[in-house]
Image (cartoon, rainbow, N blue to C red; front, side, top):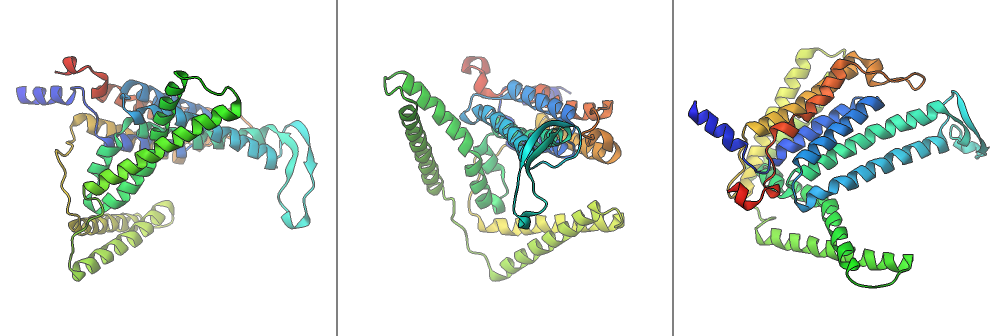
Length: 370
């Protein structure tokens, strides 16, 4: 009993949570957002994600990128609504009777401007909010998870793809840090006051700093042996290719069987299990060509399991709401959206990481951590 309590206490010490757990949680939240266009549920989901980020965000450079993702989400919503105004042809209650721009006959079915209806605005708003909520969920994972530890946690067979993904994902956080550094430096020195000249003085250092960071990252990865592979027999390569092909075909058939209601359930389950097994075997064989080791691999403790399970539960509840409560998940633009306790509870489960996850080590002074 004492050992169990000691392990639970150690798991709660200030530390950075495993990045895979954060990504599983964020993917579950994004899955819920993809299963609904209800603005009330989407706003609640964005609020839950924001609370978790505010409670468990560290002091690392990538932790400051969440604000940029929120701005990108707002831009997506505004753009989606503007496209509805420009190309919308949804009948309903006319708000503004805009003049229609005539188009040639070969673009039949497309209309520029014309009567602007309330239904068109709401349809654009709902679609934009759904896509914006997904972007915010991805931004939350990018702000909470350490991208370097995420790269280290990937299977050996995926380290090349993971390297490219991690580099692409960290561009925005590094850009945000460069912007803050350049702004702080420019406040300390005098310079041009015109808008064009100030923009040039701002953009050039930011781009130069981002390029230097990218070159430093590439040089560091090359020094640590990324890109070097070991030779494996031709037979092993062929078996690996066959397993990956079988897994791809089986997973495609299994997903189609799950989405198609007329397909027997045993067929879907069989194909999914076969695809997962073949993928695991192929990744294991493909990992033999990677000759790298991991120093002090990250361990999964009970906070990681709780955070990951909360995201999986949120995604499962969103899938259930989309199938069983269609009017709640996809409200009509002609009526006010409604919510149920089950749909709201599914979103609120996403608040679990704000309590279960330990405090990031970067927010605790070294003396207190010791």
